[in-house]
Image (cartoon, rainbow, N blue to C red; front, side):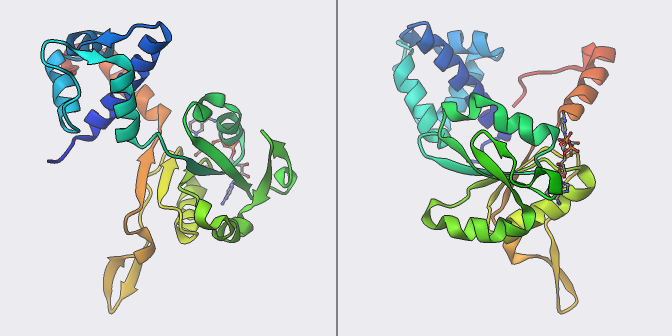
Amino acid sequence: ADIPTAAISRLVTYLRILEALEAQEIDRTSSSDLAERAGVTAFQVRKDLAYFGRFGTRGMGYTVPLLKRELVRVLGLNQTWNVVIVGMGRLGQAIANYPGASDYRFQYVGLFDVAPELMGREVRGLNIRHMDTLRDFVAAQGQQRVDMGFVAVPPERAQDAAQALVDAGVRGILNFAPIVLQPRTSELSGQQEIGDEWRGVIVENVDFLAGMKRLAFYILNPHLRVTDTE
Ligand code: NAD
């Protein structure tokens, strides 16, 4: 069955709630408890979880550590993810310095930029490298692989930065620039086709200005806000 992306976002929220419950040494929860804490309906919680299996016992609810472990597994957070950041300006440096990613097995393995004044500068134990060395760097990781690349360059450079990541073999992109990345098309016998290097590449966008725009709209039009639909 197709799983709505909103359901995956909610799984991430449920996991955060389960972590908070575990920190409070609360051992049991239920779909209605999770629903209340997540701001959705109990039906929604059950439906979201049902995409991935049967986790609770009917009428008994869920064991917090067990459900947490299952969600960690479903989301792939029990494995190591090697990450490079492209663009080490204000945002890139803030991201690299934020310790939250290491709660899970996300590891920054490389930091890249083009500005001469940033070359070699150390951020959280890693030296900033030049973009020209990205491809060799990724190749040299070998089995360890680079799983994700963050794009934190100015919008007008973002497409090229993403292309460089994809050309280097990085299959997952978290794009912080406020543009829609386009998979490069290759011209084959007059037909436009998506370049092979983009096949299977997953792009996620993080755009806080988009959030501000939605917020502005909904502050002006609160009656148009419908939540919990998928
Ligand atoms: P910034 O100007 O501080 O940093 C951008 C960095 O990218 C610079 O160090 C620059 O040398 C580098 N760069 C330029 N071209 C490059 C290339 N081809 N390859 C590698 N590095 C390159 O900008 P910022 O404020 O960090 O913003 C970065 C991106 O994130 C922008 O697209 C911006 O819209 C977005 N963004 C920023 C913020 C924020 O709070 N700063 C918030 C949300 C989104």
